[in-house]
Length: 262
Image 1 (cartoon, helix red, strand yellow):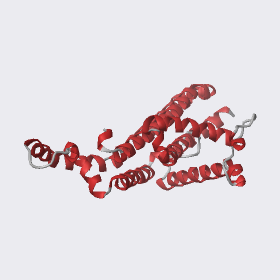
Image 2 (image 1 turned 90 degrees about the vertical axis):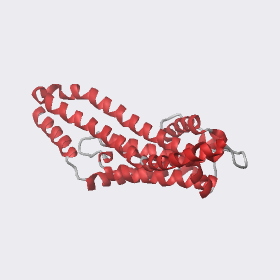
Image 3 (image 1 turned 180 degrees about the vertical axis):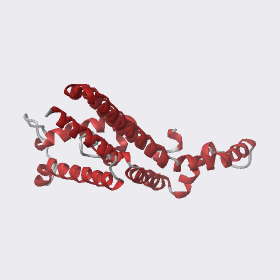
């Protein structure tokens, strides 16, 4: 009986590794729908009241869905403030969406039978493109198209002295070199965000699959042996979602901050 359970478990893990991109995209869609449903359930009291009331926001003594999400969002907002500042809390909803979508997609991928959605470039690139469009949109909205393009020119864009000078000539000469590099590095963020997440989560699942095979000879010990690797997988899932979200916040900050804030 233990051998049958182990073989079933091992088959599920290997099947997940061979899952098609369509299955992984469907898993990401499932996570998104579940988050929307849980979010709607957690906030139903606020929507029913029609306004935010202090009595509604006070956590109940028993653990419930509202209290769980309240704890998660409160912790995320505090971290978001430490990166972007309280004056930029209007970007919390986007950053939090990126984090929780990736984190729960990664966690669901640790469940036997579910593919890790972030092990396909299509999901990762889709999220990266949305992030790319969003922070550039914010930059253009904050500075205007012309000024936003100028900020890719480096120090020359913020040099205030009027008229011709040797310093201005040098700065704008350097700007012609900096500008294409900045444009390429900004566009490359789509690729780097994708690859960072893809390879780390893929490697995590490969390691889990390898140790599943290695413990096949001691099947009664396999759950105990694999437990640390599931714990490691959970840590990796969190850290990769965390790093991805931090980079998203930094890109937003770089796009919306003014030259004097640098």
